[in-house]
Image (cartoon, rainbow, N blue to C red; front, side, top):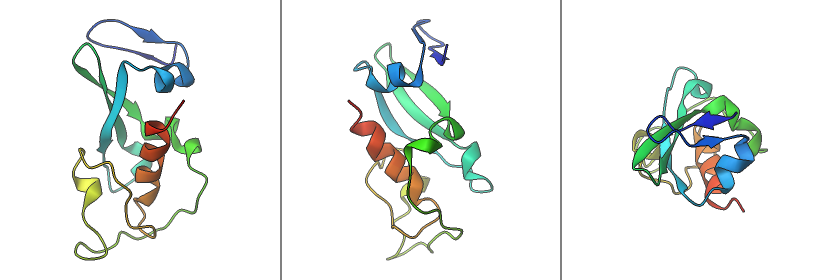
Length: 110
């Protein structure tokens, strides 16, 4: 089993089952700046609960470069990683950019 809903008990056997399920939708990412792999991707399930998935379980959905510095807040960084409800792409050379790219992959999952 890949994930079980803590509220209704629904189970997804594989990651693909979860990502292709139309009763679940990605809502953002809970950032952990010290190690982004320890953050959590957040999903809403149709039973009105939020499900968290460890970032390291979804990292292979990204095949681009990784950067080591955050862009300073301001023109270069709109602070998307600080607001879990903003799902649009990030500044492309920020160390957090891969997160918004993974969110885009999830949103377009078939």
